[in-house]
Image (cartoon, rainbow, N blue to C red; front, side, top):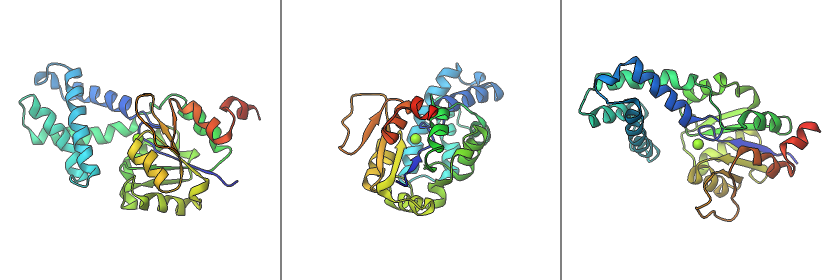
Length: 239
Ligand SMILES: [Mg+2]
C-alpha cells in the first residue's frame, strides 16, 4: 500500500505552547516589562488569552496576519493600562523573529517522525505562516523527514477546508483513502481530515470529549505508529 502520513505542526510535533512561553519570558526581560506589568506569569497569562482571541478571528478571516502580530501585544499592554502601539509592534516583531528559532518538540515527536519516515512519505499541513513554519522545521531538525510542506498561507485555504487537503494530496501524489492526518485540533485536523476522506488521528490527552466515528484519538504521539503500522515503534525500529 502506498500510504502517506500528513502531520499538523504546531502542538502536534512542535511544542508551540512551551516555545511560546520561553519566548515571552525572554521578551519580558528584554523589554523590561516589569516596569509596567507586575510579573512575567501575569504577562504570559493575559497574552495567551488575547492571542487565542486574535487567532480565532484570524481563522474566521476577520483579522489580517500583520495586524494580529502586534494586536495581541497591544491588547495585553492595554490590559495593564499601557496603550502603546509602538511597543506592541516591537514586541510583535521580536516575537515572530525569536519564537520560530525555539526547538522544543512534543514528547516522542522526533523518534516517531524518524521511525515513520523510514516507511512512508511524510508531509506537513499547517495553518501557520509560511516563513515561520519553514524556520521551525529547519531549526528543530524535523525538515529532512518531510517531503511536502503545505501552509494555509500558500494554499489560500485553511484547515478544515477540503481545498487545502485536496491541494496537499495532489502535491504529495497521495490518495485520500491511503492517507493519515495526525493533528491536535479537533475541527481543523481530525474533522477536516475525515471530511476530506483521510484517516484522522487526533492527538488529545483529555478523555472527556466525544469523538466522531472514523476519528482515532491518541494521548501520545507514541501511539501513532501502532495505528498506522499495526505494530509499536519499538518493533519496527528493530525490523
Ligand atoms: Mg496544531
